[in-house]
Length: 156
Image (cartoon, rainbow, N blue to C red; front, side, top):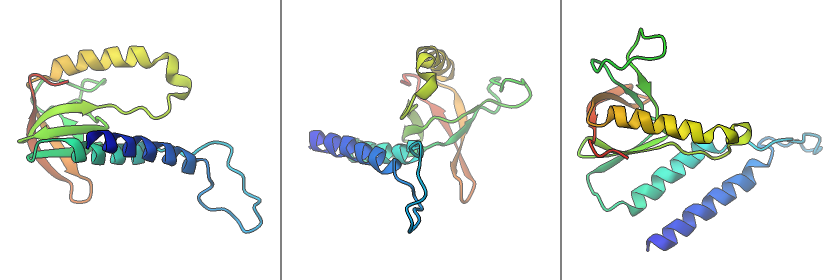
């Protein structure tokens, strides 16, 4: 079953890339030409979250897309040192209100393809710092609802 879900996911991403080449608002005269593809990153995050929901065995899991996670009271601060650190993974998975997995999804590296290894190393260092920490999740952009959570000690 997961092999079929995997194939559907890959096919859907492929089709997103094909559609991203097209102008979203063509004219009747065909005088509008798109030189680059649209970004598919947000749609790919949604699709990846759906894929995870389809294959995860946990009934108590919640998948969050682009959540705002802050570390109030942890001592972790943003670059200016004035505010609590804000972390925005592309997708994270919670089980029983504990964040167990975080994903940073890259759809097009573009000019940053030489920087990706350094970014991954920095993210790995950061993940080691936040394991087991309590955090505040902004989980709904429409209602601005928040909830307290924590990162699993075995976070990956």
